[in-house]
Amino acid sequence: MLVLGILSAIAIPSFLGFRNAAFDKEAQASIDAAMIAARTYYEEHGDFNGTVRTSPVCNHTWAYLDQHLQKIEPNIDFIAPNDQSTGPRVVSIEANNTWNSNGENLGCQAFFATALSRSGTCWVGRITVEGQWLNEYGPYYDYAQIVVHGDKNSENASQVSLLDAPLNGNAFAAFKPQSSGADQDAIANESLAVAKSYCQAQWCLIDGEFIPGFISFKDYYDSWRNVTPGTPTTR
Figure 1 (spheres, rainbow, N blue to C red):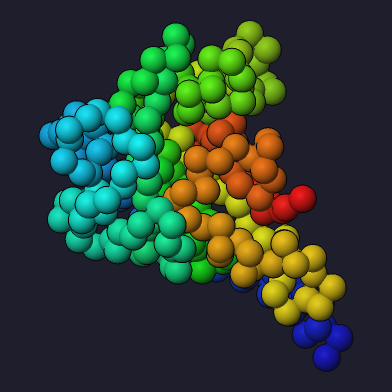
Figure 2: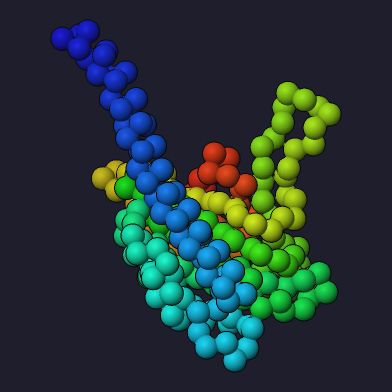
């Protein structure tokens, strides 16, 4: 019995780790598919604006973009930015304007997608085609700068690591609960329920440096491998 207990203590955490990794890859694959669909839409229309284009400005008018992407990628259930992702195949999306270094609005050049893994982690993908800032205050406050984190090279000092570098293209982020919902001592704002409630694309447009609990504009990485899931918290 003692031997079985020791083996169980070793095997169960390993099994859960492998299982959660598989769950996470499932959600990440849906985000990747959503981003490919969004790129396809962009190549045809020149922006991520899903409405009638009387103006190049998004103003968060995600309306109909989900329907367009649904036709391009029918295997994903695309939902509105203020709807929660309820699983790895349900992707909440949002489009947004970007601004150049002079504070000029470049139109609907940013796209966000979120999907909830069965592990409880909410995975996020972002596309920025052009621009330096994610809101109009960017030229005055650097917190809205479009940046990504990359690998930190600790083996070759002659190579510079990609950290806080302005970069357009694909970027990735995530957050997860730190306490089990069954944990009676769990802090309420670290529960699985709260992590789920944040798994909406609209929260990607609120900077986490000022409103903890949301993904900061600077909490994006250049690949899924590099993402360090943050913790949803509130003041």
